[in-house]
Length: 321
Image 1 (cartoon, rainbow, N blue to C red):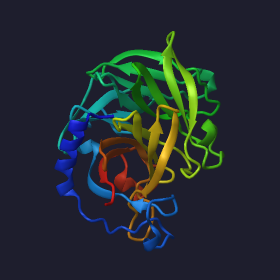
Image 2: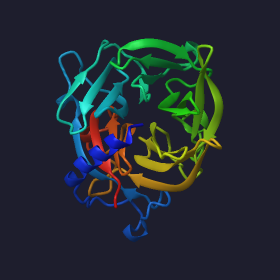
Image 3: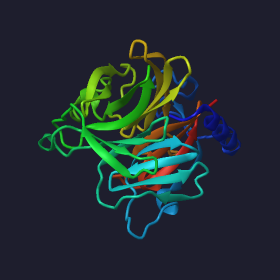
Image 4: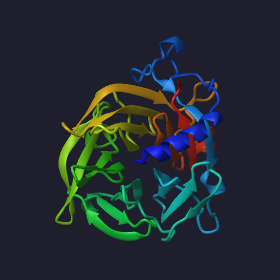
């Protein structure tokens, strides 16, 4: 979540850099039918800029940047990686970056979000139910570790827990909206169309589930990598959810009055190759830079080219107009 003034500045700065994207829309769908109203009719996001994280950050002690989340705050993009506890801060022009305090041991950070007063939270993934419930780490405004608290949710399947998170405040109460990686918060075999996000509030030292929100059936992704919120000023939020397995983005609305995802759904795919092959194979984090501009980060990929061309990178995309 970012302040509206910053959103406007970033959008104005980025739009001149946008170029028409002639990459085909969703493979197998006639271009004339692509209108964004469903996943099969998804539009293609337009790339504004991207850069390998290793081109922006130190490489002496870090062999890979396995990016797992990104959030915009104060004119910077803060990137979490699950293989180190140091949070990267990168300017929105993607010209320079630095690492915050911490070390290079595995953190298992799977998302990052920021509060209105500049604190950060990350979701900490557990390897299995033997490790107990999923955890939330709090970081200071300098991204240094402050404390870690459990949630009330234990996932049965290894490394398949909360993959995304977004902070919000409603009527003075602080919440985290935590996105499950798999459909129905279960395993890889769960059928698409069962995306879930849990609304968490800190109660007696435990991030406790207040309710579970179901994503629309139409957001039938194979998995869910991250979510971002942008306040609309009327008690609702624009919501962005990305999937690395589906290489796609869903935009919708979160109503806090009824705590439900409502409104029109819009679907977008990340650009493909000229032959229609997926190349953004490891999208792990998303944040709003404005109503029509988003920043995304990619983890280390498991595949070959063209997936390796886009891995361990930070990207800025514009919604097609």
